[in-house]
Image 1 (tube, rainbow over the protein chains, first blue to last red):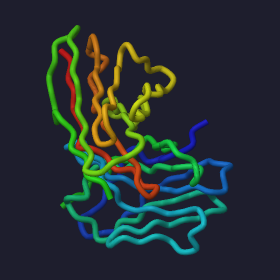
Image 2 (tube, rainbow over the protein chains, first blue to last red; image 1 turned 90 degrees about the vertical axis):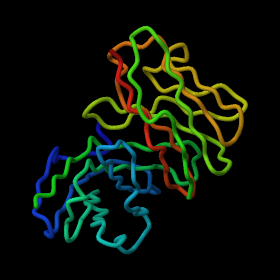
Image 3 (tube, rainbow over the protein chains, first blue to last red; image 1 turned 90 degrees about the horizontal axis):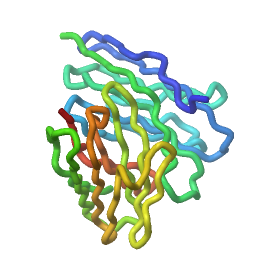
Image 4 (cartoon, chains in turn green, purple; image 1 turned 180 degrees about the horizontal axis):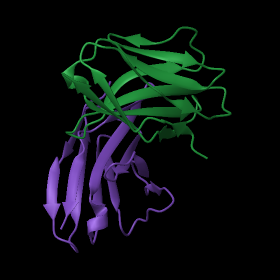
Length: 117
Length: 112
């Protein structure tokens, strides 16, 4: 079964508008972390934002915020005031087991965001 | 945080040849991780490299095809052996610090 689901293979947004990228996850581990990464066409993976399963408040980093709904197991990324440079692939990822060593990262299939001028 | 230098950034190789990708981290880390990202796909973990021991490979990946070295706590290499066009992918190395994954710039490999 997919552990990370991103149902939007592609999204378009007008420059300066806000956009929400969906992510749902599946885990039975009470301790986990949720991440969003941006991958521009150059191929590098750029960390955007992190949400821990025990965090009470939604994470925010500049124009990025994470809409964390634990009961629904969703962790949507909200990008406010989109910029042309935001055009990229966006991956939602989950790491289970805070005390485990080893990279138990699972990545979703990604959403390609295109920002229109 | 961690800064990872990965090279080459891209290469075009003939089928049947091998390519070695290098990854240098700016600090000591216990484990380093190698991922493959096939065109239009997400990241798939190839193997975990510990210093001083053999790498641990994920299902579907074997040491003969993807030999890995980890001579010290800041460096690792991944070799893609006997390449075929199906090996055309982005290969990324990664380390983990404070629960966050940091990635190298990636190696975009095209096999012709």
